[in-house]
Image (cartoon, rainbow over all chains, first blue to last red; front, side):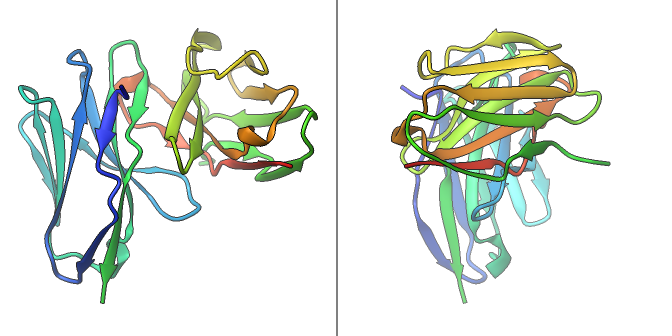
Length: 109
Length: 114
């Protein structure tokens, strides 16, 4: 079983819609969580860290549920420029970073 | 400030040939990760180093793969002999706190083995 699992999608949503991605992790010892964004044929880049209390950055909200071992990302008011693959990432104190396979989002005009 | 630098950007080689991928991490970062990305398996961690020492190489698929980090500013990933199933994008990433903080990725090396 992979350390981090997420629905690969694709998610096709109209501009302005709200979309949510979930991700589960298998290692309860995981301490750090992130969402990365990867554009086509580019490298992954950090979108936001995920804190225990939940955190928001503009139209993006990330939440962590340790009891159920899942992480979520909510995107409000989707823009065409949000089209990308979103990678869920878990890190542990052994200092590995484990990536999910990514969820592909396409925002349609 | 230069980011993670990988070379070459693209590599096409014949089956059986040796391939060497190179990475220069961000100065001051003491963790370096090598990942492989394919459509089928996504991003897979191959190996990572801390202060130039390999810490976990359990993701290295087989003995044909080897990685070195002779100093803080350079690492190589070698495949010998290469096979068509090694075709993928190989990313190098570095960070200053391992799995506890953001990792910065290079632009990747797209390897095609024919």
